[in-house]
Length: 368
Image 1 (cartoon, rainbow, N blue to C red):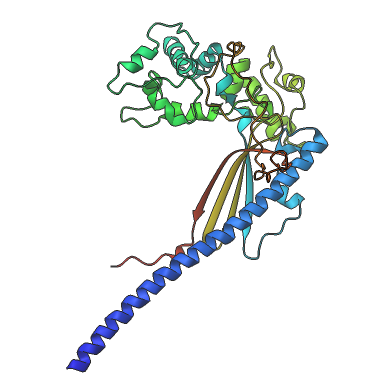
Image 2: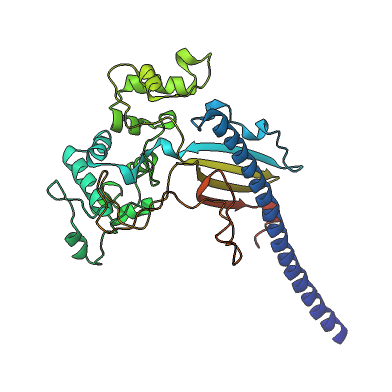
């Protein structure tokens, strides 16, 4: 009897040890998978950036993947590790309207294009500008002021700088009514606003990637002009034989659009490019996304107050730095070197996100 009891306790202890060892092995396997996929993604990303820099130098700027860099890994003869598949996609962030540089009339035109009532469009533009700029004077009745925020149930003050996140819209009066539903969730207009504007600061949106809302707000494009634009860029309709195209100047774009159209607020170069690299191996997947800016491109919104376009700096204010720090800035130099050493990196890193989806084969089955 004593022997049977001892064997039972030994069996229980052995099962517990196996379960713990299995969990430890699972964690180590997941960490190893993530490390391998991450390394592959970073290698592919550096290859993509090298290809983009080659095209930027040769073409004196980046305009569109239609220039020939839509498949940069193939162009560079990049070979991923055995069993891995690497996918690359691009999104031109600078095709959108730059929110930090928008003025009232452009915002109002944008909102009116969404069939928002004129009075609500004007109040919403006033509310956004009042949130972002300390020198803004509301032009419409019912537009919120700093006192309205101070008298709320939880008093707070507008930050006097452009949005750093679209979630800030929930804190802006008028915007919290138009961009959110009754349960406080972002609605279709919230998503449309996010697709039309960028939180990064740059001067001219890229015509080669401008969404319909941006074209309508700045240039009053009608549906026919928008269709001609889309057909040229995608290589459809009368341009099907030529394939996807791109504009080298605003004048080229105006000729395609036809009619009386002004494109003075647009450019044709990429100012901020979102690059997505996905590495798949078996059922595991790792995703790396970065937003980069070429020299003279987009900048992150600074912490100081956002002035209205064309506003003069305040007397005695320190000058703004010429550009954001380089993404490739190296570590501080040793004492006596006379300054910090910097890597001559061709792009400025504005944003980086990563996500790991590990293989389901490593996930233990749920207990029944």
